[in-house]
Picture 1 (cartoon, rainbow, N blue to C red):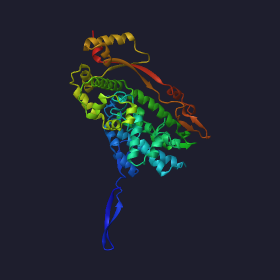
Picture 2 (cartoon, rainbow, N blue to C red; picture 1 turned 90 degrees about the vertical axis):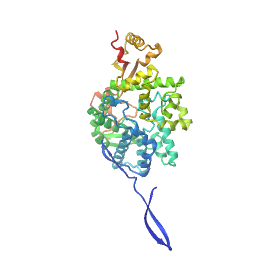
Picture 3 (spheres, rainbow, N blue to C red; picture 1 turned 120 degrees about the vertical axis):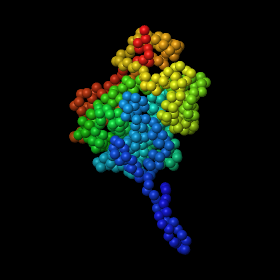
Picture 4 (cartoon, helix red, strand yellow; picture 1 turned 180 degrees about the vertical axis):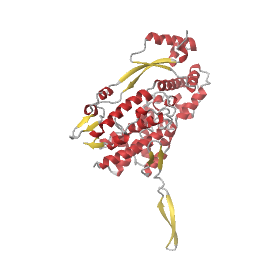
Length: 433
C-alpha cells in the first residue's frame, strides 16, 4: 500500500512521521457505453494495472470486423472493464433481494469477470488454432489466473474457484459463464454500440434488475421475460450480421491462411520477420501440455498482441514466397476472399474448377491451392436448452426454462443449431476464361 507522510510530530524528543494510506486506487474510468465506472478496490486496481490485463488494450474485441464496420475498433480491455461494471450492478441487485453475498465474494466474482478474457491471443478466435496447437483461450486464461494468484499471495483463490465452478455458490459462476452471463450482456451491448448495428441493442439494465437466485441457481423474474426474448434474438442477429458476416469471415479466413503459410515456412527452416515471441510460436508447435509445463511458453504468449501480427504481415507482403506475399497484400488492400454461403455443401465440380483456375493463375502446386480456394462450415446457435438454461421465476414460484415460459414460438427455433457451408476463393479466379 502506498503511504503518504501526513504530518511530523515530536515524540520523546524525536521526530516521528505519522503515515496515512493514500486512497489513490479508487479510480473512475469514463466508459463510452456506461459512463463512469468505479474501480471497487485496491486489489482490483492492481490487477488492472498488471501487464496481463494491460495487454488487452492492444487486442481488438472483434478481430477483423473493422474491415466491415469501421467503428469496431474497441478492445478486450474495454470489454473487461465493462463486464466488471455490469457485475457490480448484478451483485447489488441480487443482494437487494436478500441473497447473502460477502464482501470477499463480491470482490472475487468481479475479479473473475475482469480476468475472464486474459488468455485471448492476437485477433482473438481467428488465431487460436494457428499460432498455438489447438489451445483454447479459456485454458490459457486459467493458467494466467493461477500465475496471478501466486503473484498476489493467494488473494485470487476464491476468484479462481468461482471461475472454475468449484465454489459452493453456483450462481456466482453462472454470472461469469453461462447463457445469461455478464460476459454476453456486455459484449452484445458493446459490440452493437461500436459497430452501429442496432439489432444487437439489449435491455441489459432491465435484465440485471430482474435477476434473482433460487436454490443456488440464477433466475430471471417473470416480468423480465420479454427482455430475455429480445436478448436471445439480438444474439442470433448479431451472429449473422456481425460475427458471421461473410466479409468478416473472408478477412478472418485470410488472416488464418497467412499464419498457416508463415508457420509452414518457419517449420521448414525459413527465418521470417517477426517479433521474438511471435517468431518462437511460428517455429514451434506449442501444445496444451507444453503451456502447462513450461512457464516460458505462457510468458511469451503474454507478450503478443495485434501489433505483432500486423507488423509482420506488412513486411511479409514483400516476401519471396508467392503465396505468403500474395495473401498479405490482399489483406492489407482489403482484397478479401470471395465467400459463398449455402445451406448445402458446395458442388465438388465447382470447387475443382476453381482449384484448376488457381493452379493456372498463380502457378502453384495442387497441394498449395488450398490457400486460395477452400471450404468450411459456420454455426449459429443462440441458445442451448439444458446447458445452463435461462430459468424464469414464475409468479407462482415455479421455475421454467425460457423456451417453455415464453409464448414466443420463435425461441424454440433459436435453440436449434443452424449450420451453413462456406466456399472461399480469391477473386482473381472468379472470371478466369
